[in-house]
Amino acid sequence: MNVLISPRGIKRRLNISAYSQRQRSLARLGLFLLAVSCGLAGYYLGGTASQQALFAQWKSDVAQQQTQLEDMQDESDAQIEALTQKIAYFQVYINRLEAVGNKLMITAGIDDLEIDFSSDPGFGGPSAAAKSRDHIELLSEMEQTLSLIEFELQSQQNKLLTLDAVLSSRQRNEDSMPNGRPIRKGWMSSNFGERTDPFTGRKAMHKGIDFAGKSGADVLAVADGIVIATVKHSGYGNLVEVDHGNGYVTRYGHNKSFNVNSGQVVKRGDVIAAIGNTGRSTGPHVHFEVLKDGRQINPKKFLNRTK
Image 1 (cartoon, rainbow, N blue to C red):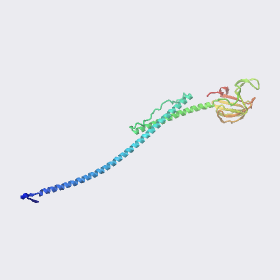
Image 2: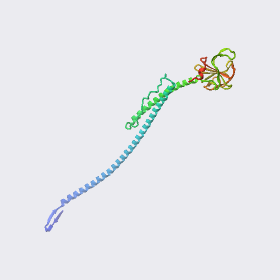
Image 3: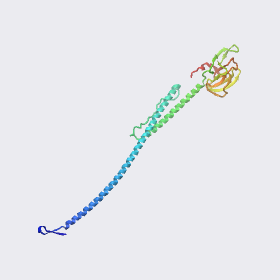
Image 4: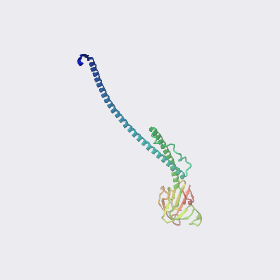
C-alpha cells in the first residue's frame, strides 16, 4: 500500500506495505505464543493442582499408616511389658518355692536326698524398656526364658513331690508309732515288770501297764493301725489288738465292750472300746501292752513319747 504524505506542501511518497506485513506476522505470532502460553499455563496449573491433590492424598495415607505403626508399636511394647512382668512373677514364685523347699528340708532334717533347692535358676528376663531393639528378638528371648521357667517349675515340682513323699512316709511312720495313754482319765495302777500277782500272791512278770478308770469310760487307740482282733480271752477278757505296722502291735484288755470290729482302720485317739472288768481282773481297768516283732516291751517309753 502506498501513502502520499505532504507535509508543509511537500509531497513525498512512503511505502509501508512490507512493514505492516511484518507487524501483522509478529502480532499473529505473539497471539499464538500467548495462546500457547495460556494453554500451557492452564495445563501446568491444572496438572500442578492435580499433583498437589495426589501428593496430599499420599501424605495423608503415609500419616495414617505411620499412626497405625505407632499404635502397633505401643501395643507390642505393652505386650512385651506384660510378658516381662509375668516372667518376673514366675521368677519370684520359683524363689518362694525354693525357700519353702529349703525350710522343709531343714525342718525335716533330710540330708541324704539328692534334692537341691538352693541352686539359682539359670535365666533372666529381657528388658522391655529397650525399645530400640528388634521386637522379634525380644519375643524370641522371652520364649526361651519362658521355656526355662517351665523347666525350672517342673524341676521344683518334682523336688517338692519327692520331699512330700518322704515327709508323708515319715508322718505315716510317726502316726503309726504308739504314743500316749489309752485312756482320757484315770491313773496307772500297775507298772510293767515283775510284781506280786493279785490272785496268787506270788512274784510274776506283768507284761503291760494297767490304767484304772471308771467303768464304761473310753479306751483309745494310741496310734494309727488296723484292728486285727476283737476277741474274748480267758486272761485278757474282752481284748482288742491293733497292728500299727513296722512290727508294732498294741493290746487293750479287760474291756466292757467293743467299739470296733476286726479289719477296721483306726486313727490315733479313736475310741475302740469301753473300760471294763472282764477276764482275770480285780476291778475296772485297761491292761495295755506294746509288742515289737511279737515280743512285749515296756509301754512306758511310749506314754509321753515326743515325735
